[in-house]
Amino acid sequence: MEKIRTRFAPSPTGRMHVGNLRTALYTYLIAKHEGGDFVLRIEDTDQERFFDGALDIIYHTLEAAGLKHDEGPDKDGGYGPYVQSERCSSGLYMKYAKELIAKKEAYYCFCDQERLNSLKQVVGGKEISIYDKHCLHLSEEEVAANLAAGKPFVIRANVPNEGETTFHDEIYGDISQPNEELDDMILIKSDGYPTYNFANVVDDHLMNITHVVRGNEYLSSAPKYTRLYNAFGWEEPKYIHCPLITNEEHQKLSKRSGHSSYEDLIEQGFLSDAVVNFVALLGWSPSDNREIFSLPELVEAFDYHHISKSPAVFDMVKLRWMNGEYMKAMDFESFYEKAEPYIRKTVTKDYDLRKIAALVKTRIEVFPDIPEMIDFFEEVPDYDLDMYKNKRNKCTPEKSLDILRDVREILAGLDSFDNDTLFAVLGDYGRNKGYKVGLVMWPVRTAVSGKRMTPGGATEIMEIIGKEESLRRIDQAISRLEA
Image (tube, rainbow, N blue to C red; front, side, top):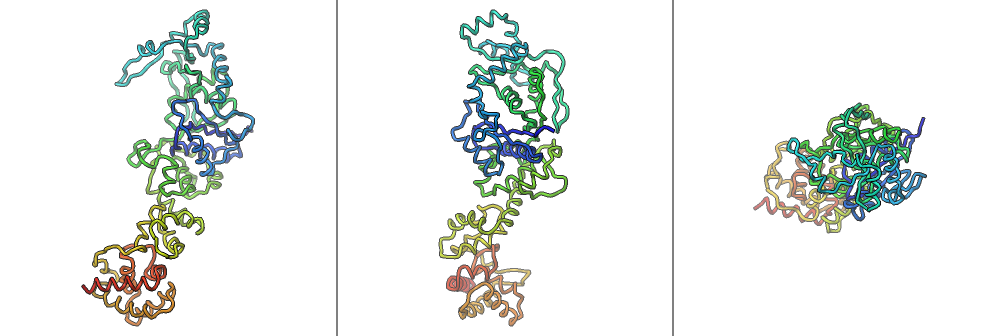
C-alpha cells in the first residue's frame, strides 16, 4: 500500500481564514490517521496579493493549532523546494508547460488585452470571456517569430470542444462537464509565473501527493485538473471537497463577520484547542454523537468519508459552549496564566487574584467574559434596592435590613474570615433564627456585590475582599435600606 501524502498549500496573503484552517486540519488528519506525511507548500505565485509577514502567520497558526508538518520550506523531505516562487525560478513549470505544447495539449497565446476584451460577452447578466483558440492555429514559424521578437505571451491548455470530462470526488462522486464549457485556461501567465491550477497539478504529482482537500467552491474547476492529469498521463490524487462554511444567516462566512480567521478567534479569547475541535466539526461528523475531541483523538477518529455535502454553519453559541468546556478542563495554572491579564485590568485592589480566577473558571465561556463578571470586586455598582427581593427565598428589602444588621454585628466579632468559617457562622445564625440559608445569603451577597449574578457566593466573595471591606459594603447597604 502506498504511503498517504497530503499537502496544505496556502497563499501568504494574510490571516488564516477558518475555511483554510479546516482544510489544513482535514489534510493533517487524513495523513496522520493512516500514518502518512503532512506537507506544507507555499503558493506565492500571485505576487500582487503577497502579504508581508503572512508566511510567519501561516507557521504560527499551524504550530499553535498543533498541526506539525513533516515537510515544508523549513523541513526538506526530498521533494523541495516547497515555495512555488522558488520552484518557478528554476524553470520547472515552464518545462512542463512546454512538454504539453509538444504533445499539442497546450499552445502559446500572444493575444493582447484589446483582443481579449473583444471576446467578452454578457450571458445571464454576467460578463464572461471565452477564448476562441485564435492562437492555436498559428504556424510553428509564426510562433517562433513572435517568441524571437519578445512578444508577450501566455500558455493555454488546449481543451477539445467536443465530448465531456468526468472528475471523481470522494464526497460528491463523479462530476461530468461538457468540454465546450471548459475554457482554454491559462497555464503560464505573461509574467512567467504558473497559474494556481497548473502549479497545483505539477507540484502534487512531483511531490507524490495522494489526497487533496479543498473547499467545494473549487468543484467547478475540478474537471480542468482532470484534463491536465490526462494530458500528462499522470494518475490523479484522490480529491476531497469540503462543504461551504456559512454564518448563522446561512451566508458565506466573510471577513466582515469579525470571527472569520483563526487569529480573530484567539484575540476574542477562545482557546486554540477549542477552535481546532470546533473547526473539525464544521462539515465532519464522527460515527457517534461525541463533540469534544483532543487532536490525537481526532487523528484516531477521523474518517473523511463522513464529511458532509451540506453547508456547515459557524455557530458562535456552540463555539462559546465548547470553549467553556475546554476552560473547565484546563489545569488551574494554565487557566490563570491566560485569565490574569483580564483580572488585573479590572481589579486593581490588593486581593488574591488566584481566588477570583478560581471563581470564574467554570463560569465563563471566553476570557473577555471576565471583566463584567468581576467588576464588583473593585467597587460595588449602583443598584436598585428591588434586588433585595427574592420570591423563592421570601426575601424583601425589610427582611434584608434586619438580616444585614444582625450579620454585621456577628461578622465584626470574627477573628477568622475564611470562606468555611463565614459559611458556618452565617449558617448557625440562620438556624437560630429559623431562616433557610438562602434567605441569609441573598441580602449579604447583594450587599457585598451589588449584582444579581456573581461568580461566587456571599462567603466566597467576603473571603476575597476581606473583613474591613465586607463590613464597609454592608454598612453602605444598611444605610441605603434605612433611607
